[in-house]
Image (cartoon, rainbow, N blue to C red):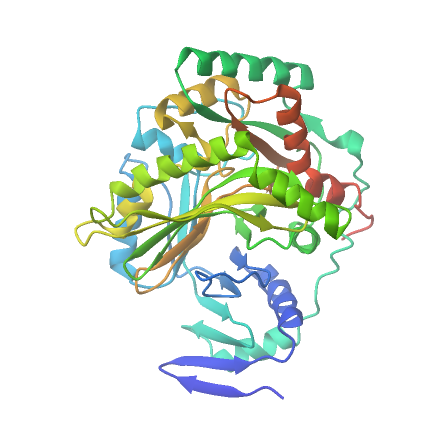
Length: 445
């Protein structure tokens, strides 16, 4: 039996089967032109607040200003005007208005650099209850419609079989290995200490149901920062394990990932691999460089003396990999607007390198695909001005009009990186993508 409570204009429903209700709510959301769905997949940490969030419909929205006004200033004004829930994305290429940089590589998706919307309906999911925030419809009516919705068939996401042979590489293995050597040459010269280098896997003439594809991908990945985003027939299908930055009251938190190893086939092997990752000099070197970079970024926004490393070299386990994650915290200075705190840390150090500006210049030189939303961020801002944004990795991005499906992956290159090892790490991070694509079914309407 569902219990309904009314408290401060918020309607609260007790849910018996939360997993089933989330699936119904996601299927119900397919009718809307704009959708943002953020799912923690029951991962809990000291900074977790919601099990999931679903935002649909548009009361108002912002896109990049044609007159060239700063996108971060646009977001700042939008929040100050609305003081409401806002959901949206920031692309990697916003770097070009923060620093004197450019992005001119191939772009098969063609998203704007930023999009935020004030939703008509927000559903906040907790462990055993949901809260429905709605302006033009009763919460009970929405709840009843969701309960009457049939869940999606995640097994059927493509109307034609997609095989391994359909997945193309923007960079050949030979070219990838050669490029790693060139990047290491820059490291030897002292231009950079570390650089995140990415490559694109893509499928042309991909005919998929992005909602069913997300359900399938999410069932495999079960990531703590999973996200689905629909914008004008373009879709993000994201299984990110990484938090970019979150604000809780006056506290800023970032949790960069550097260091990846596969899961074991037995519990004994799994523990050995975790220990191997924890003691890896290369992964520790990568991780500590990014920790120092984030500390520096936080120093622009936080009170002096408040930035500290809460956890260093933490090993966290996910469905297919173990990751090395560190946690950096600081107290936001009262003189710094929270949007500026996002800008001051953008783009995230884990997807750029050190020093950040030179690393981003070389990224543009060596990569063949415009990153766009990949290695950007998706998340939300609350009416109170708290926020949480992920790092867009482990993600498919789909342009339904062009039938173009993109999946980028990469890793941090340091002095002692092995080109073959880095290539294998890219394939490991693409494992979920290959699993889903090679399990495609037929006959979807």
